[in-house]
Length: 169
Image (cartoon, rainbow, N blue to C red; front, side, top):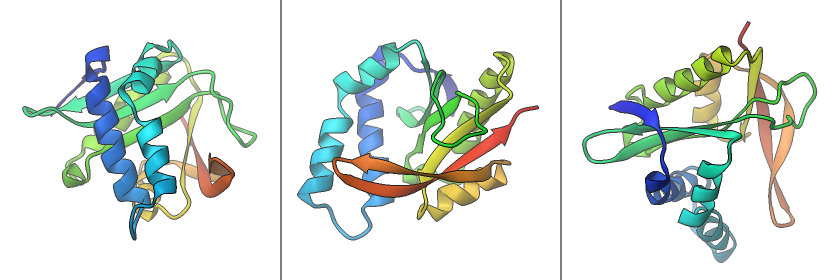
């Protein structure tokens, strides 16, 4: 496994990995049209390319001999949904489920945190689904603390998310 900055040529791989992780994490009982339509419209190569080209985003990928097995995105100037957080957000941290437990998520996260520190950030925040127990355990083990709640919205539906903050000082 090696980490490197993502490039535009990674967009389709990042999109496919995003679909795999999102469906596997959030759709426990089956896939209906509401969620299928969201996933297929949200995680497209053009949308990922657009995110990769946005200078506020810094993507890093984890790569093995076969391809990308995880990625993370740090977003600058991203106002937190709760007070007391910086505007540095870990907006995505996805690792293919079959690669969990190998340190990929930890290494991706540490790389983003090093970037934050190097650029003078005093803290970083993220939000994760309030029912995503494995992610919550992971972030808390890395030193993040819950500081509030927000809702992830798909159309007119809201899904409770916990906001976490990590002090870098």
